[in-house]
Length: 288
Image 1: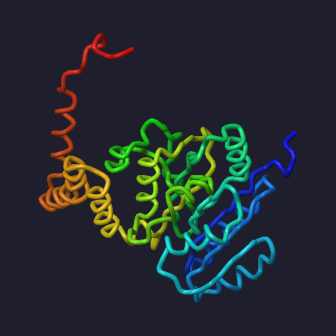
Image 2 (image 1 turned 135 degrees about the vertical axis):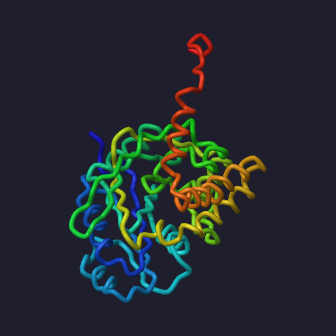
Image 3 (image 1 turned 135 degrees about the horizontal axis):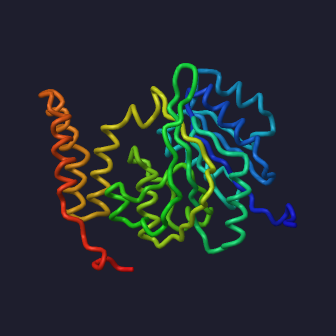
């Protein structure tokens, strides 16, 4: 049996601002963990919705928290990293939840494979409504072979970024989150890949991710697109920039034009017909 003193300490770090209801749900999910050696560190951006009273109500179940103005999500996460004392860092969005066995599964994998720097796991995706949440999908187990710069830039790496655990040594080696991007996590993963950080993945669902009106991804989409283009210029080549330019900007505009002309369904039918008429490769031509 693994002794408590052998279990790596996991720091759950949270950046939040005026998300009281979601924050309570997230913290409660962590406190239901079947793992004992963890701490919660919260950095609040001077909320005015009662967040500080909520944090006070948890007492010593929250190891550290501060509430003060900051420059945004990645500024707050960087503060939390430096406040945290754990060997493993788990960045946690304030509106998501974690499964009870997630921490123990992650700790076991890190202990089993000391060379691992970053660990991902699948997540279930939910759309929040006024009354209930509707399951809209589940991310597949991460294919570590897909974690390349080109596939990251082109959106083909296929992993749920928040469902991750990161050894502290990664931040010590490649630095904190970049604060000049709205997609600071994407820049961090690109930097990690270029630095030959060792990734691994769990097969089991460890995380629940919620989408809701007013959620970060929906309110900053255009800035995200612009920042992804900047990352493409920094880490990719001309072909990557052209690819991203089409998929992030040109294709949505073309879709809106087709929608305005009432020909979206016709275009889809033509594309489907073309796909069925496309010759398939002979089986003998595939590498076994």
